[in-house]
Image (cartoon, rainbow, N blue to C red; front, side, top):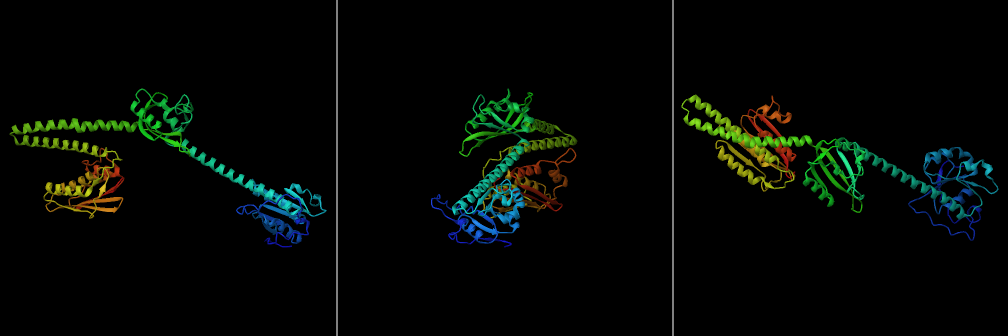
Length: 512
């Protein structure tokens, strides 16, 4: 008796003279071999001898056949196990364990009984095996019955694989649905195909949608126009409708109404969902409450108008009267006071103009792709600074042959602010300001403005990181202007300053 397994190399045509491999005239034509990629394996758990060799011959043209008498081999991978009576009696007690291990996949076991033996010889065999074949048996009959069991196993394997795929798909869908349900933005899905009383009835809303609007399950089956109200802008509604009719994405800020009648500003994005054929089947909507942002925007609009118009007009009036009084003022102390009034009024006017300028630069939409050639503009900037500050040396270095094209909004204004501020604060004759431009890569531009002036006070630079308060704040808008412009472009802005001078480094993507 062997103690291991062996792969059969027997000649499949050598079965003449033994009933186990006997061919009979009139049998149905033998099936062709199973596809090679399937490579089914039949394990013969039989004692060595002629019977095992002949059974192996009968099966080897359709299966990979391995032979063994080692019970541990039953833990290996195979598609069908064939026992003789003696080995079955020895291994029967472990068959159910192997079936359980294979579950839910079908794992077949077959018992071969020799001529003259009965099933009673090995007890209640059908409690353990899936087929009992009595020898002698025709070669093709044996092969066919084994093939049927193997095919059942292969079908079971396919079904198990599909069940796993289905389970994975269900789990994936469950995870995605949970993510949508618990997303921090409102999500709604409208069905394009169910055209009834509602044009695009909702088929799904998440928890945030209900929290945002107050509408839960009652929103299902209804077009989300129910969120619109008396003050909703008709042009915005028309924009949404046109995008849906054209089956294209749209993003708007729209005034909507909650279930309790409360108005709120909704940042709404709608996108079509297409099937494999490219046909739109649904629209998905994302909703966010931006009421606070809208209030801030309106407040800033009013404050900007007050600074840029009302305040400037009043300052011009104060300056005009101060100048008239200066003409008639004989007392030197009065003249000095009027000079201070005029200076303060001019400074407030300058601040108002600067606020307006900053707002204009930062309000330019990011998608604006107007190209600016920094080389020519920086050359002109150097000339203007040399004329305005003749006692300061203005140096400019740039990579040769590179026009330094950029679409970063306001970048030139940021460099001008940094360079002019540096030149303005150099008190001693012979001071210098250097503007150095580097092309770090095709995608990034770095600009350094270095001076040998008195340096920038710490309280002016520290507020850029912490923000301003009533106690800690800067004296102007210059550094904030640079900080905002660079931030809008997605770059970075750093300052190094000491009593011996300052270096402002601006680094931005060339085309944000």
